[in-house]
Structures are given as C-alpha cells and as structure tokens.
Length: 299
Image (tube, rainbow, N blue to C red):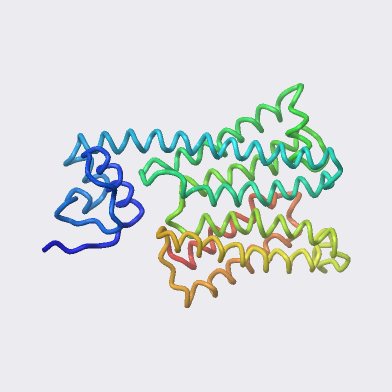
C-alpha cells in the first residue's frame, strides 16, 4: 500500500498540471508516490526525466505567470488612479495620497506573489512589475514633457527630477526583493514591510504628532520613529504569518518575534539618522533591513 503525503506548493502545482495532461481525476489533497512518482524530487529532475510532462507544465506556468503579471500591473495602475481621483475630489490631501500609495503599492505587491506559479522563473515575471515602473520613472524623469499625473502621485515637490531619486529607489527595492529573496525567504518581506509600511507610516504620524523632535535629527520626530517600529514590526509579522500559513515559509515562532523586533529597531534607527540628503530612506532602510535580517534568519 502506498503512503500518502501532503503536497508542498510546488508539488501541488505539478500534480495539478500533470493531472490535466494525463486526463486523470481532479488533484487530491494528498498525492500518492505510486500514482505520481515524478513529483518526488526537484522540478529540474521532473524536466530531465519527463520532458513531455515538463513541456505541459512549463507552458501552463508561462501562461499563468503572464496573466499574473498583467493582473498585478493593472492593479498597480488602478491604485494610482484611485488616489489621484480622491485627491482631485479633496477627499485626501496630495501629501497623504502620495504616502498611501507608498505604503500600499509595495505591500500589495508582496501579497500578490502567491498568485504566480510554482515555477522557478515565476519571480522574474513578478519582477517585471517594478521593472516596468522603473522604466516609466526614468523616461518621465528625463523627459521634457513628463507625465504630470505620475509626478503628482509620487513626488514631494512636483519636479520631474524627483522621479529619479526616491520613487526610483523604491521600485528598485521591490525588484531586488522579488528576484533575490522571493516568497520562500523572510528577508525580502521584512525589508519591504519596513520600507513601505514602517517608513511610510512614520512620515504620516510624524507630521501629525511629531512636535517633539529627535535630539540628533530635528527633521525626524519621536512619534514618527515609534510608529515606524510598531507598524513595521506588525506588518512584518503579518506577512511572515501569511506566507507560513500557505506553506512557503517554515518559521520558528519562538525566536521569530525577537528577530523581527531587532530588525525593526535597527531599521528605525537607520531611518532616524540625519543622512537623508546623502542617502535616501528608500535605500538606507531596505539595505539595513536586508543585512540585519540576513544575519538574524541566516537565509
């Protein structure tokens, strides 16, 4: 009698795709090694020993990832248009609209990763989303007649050259996290949680409640730094829990809370330093987070 075992996300994708190819029944929750021997091992082994099935799976994954890329690009565009509309109707201020786009676009990008396929190339399709935005920022930043809607949505002072600084660094951080860390590593998730969630909320709360400034940096407030630590910590934990619950991460929760707290504290301290004129927060915060998270989690 063959034993049953629960499917990992990758095995489930392969089992489901191969079931369609072989005209078998709907994929069960548990897959038998006897019924599906080619699912045991890596996807590279599957391609080497079962080229026909591999072709079917690869083609299915390609179409899947192309569709996911289009959906995420459309969602990102819709997000910007939504806040542009809210700004025009005076529902939110332009400054708050810009910060909400900063917070939501990166976090929604991270949360979209599970809709991509289980293929090894899926991360590159996801990275196309920030890459397209990167090209758009560069073109508009260097253009004589840039897109005014884009400038209003993501810049502080409404100058085209601003697109080549903070906003460009922001989308590059998204791209790096997708390509190098992806959904089976906590490092990229925590990095984007601190840059998008933590740093974004720090500016919002700092402007509203930031009358008491940090002694070594009068441009930053104590309220903003406290908000960054708390919000960045909880967003990080939320993302790790979400990816653990769907099987991409396996966290030791006895130590994870402490590690995330340490990473959040270091990122908050880096953000509070008076180095903004020399090094943009969209560079310093994700870089510091990646380094400390790498040491803490050992991925």
